[in-house]
Image: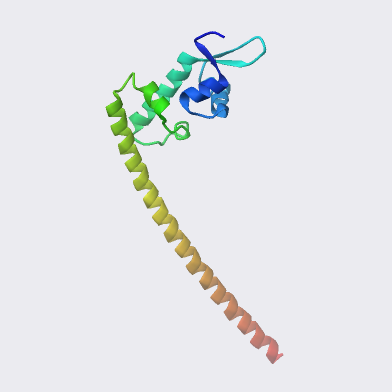
Length: 146
């Protein structure tokens, strides 16, 4: 096997992602690859690390995980090390901490909104039950008068 190429399973281990993610990246032509004589995928290490670095730098640039192509790829230590060539680890860690705090704040707001909506739904449900009971009571009264 060429030393600049690795199997899908080794590529997945390198970047702490599932093998299915590596295959998806191949299908989307996000990373370079070749096939061996038996037809197995061989992932180009440089291309793989460049793609991971691109993901990491996208997260740092946006300050939050907003891009749907990025949000599925949380950074692991392997990704952090791969991304360290463009930004110092300390800067990257600080950016990630800030992003984490933003995401926690966003999550808290969404949880509160969800709670408010559930309360509103219960209120509406009770109102609907009361209306149905009134109509049923009225219908019973009308039937008894016939």
